[in-house]
View 1 (cartoon, rainbow, N blue to C red):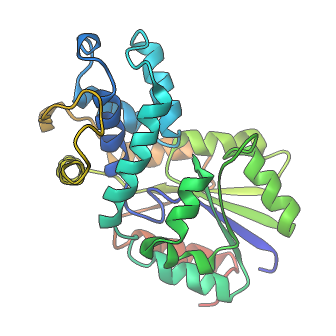
View 2 (view 1 turned 30 degrees about the horizontal axis):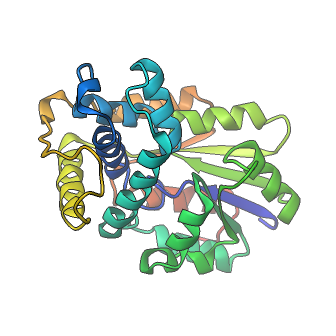
Length: 282
């Protein structure tokens, strides 16, 4: 389909790291919160909150958690900056979903415009684009769009893509309800087809992320965080979305199509969907 564009969420849609992000968020918030203000907070509650706010930037998650917890964290900017460093290093051990890189390559060759759209700060994404992981996909993308001054994921990114390549249709592939609700708010203004990405994280994957975050922290310099302590996570207290509930939630948020399955199946389904809609040949 000439003039088609696809906007992809990087974390959780292209790179399989949605088990990592809530854990890195939780550890960063905890380590920057004074010990005397942690009475009503637990590391498991922070991880669970991170899952419920998928699609928001780390700073926004911290702000929202602060609203519910008497501003326990006093320096959101410092904690969010540490999260960026922690998550970036830890995510080097994460991989793309099976078939993601190959699909981006085939779409690029077919003349489809692919963009990454993210709430992460632009400078963080620019560094990632030049990393070994980022270089696997950045040549296949039109651009990686992040948070810039007065320029954010959502309406600003939709407008930018529309003005830049003037696509006949934008496919928006996202794994979070909040992201699909943004599409609903913009459907009258832009021609967007929303594709829900229904891949569920289980508790063992979260515990793998905990181990990865701890291993990453061990390589950071002493004093990198103000209130460090050894942390254990109780798996029984974790709450992760169930697959059928996630798919239903994405449909309820207005997804025109939902791609689901395990890490091996989901991009096969996306490929079939784009073939059916004329973006790729069989």
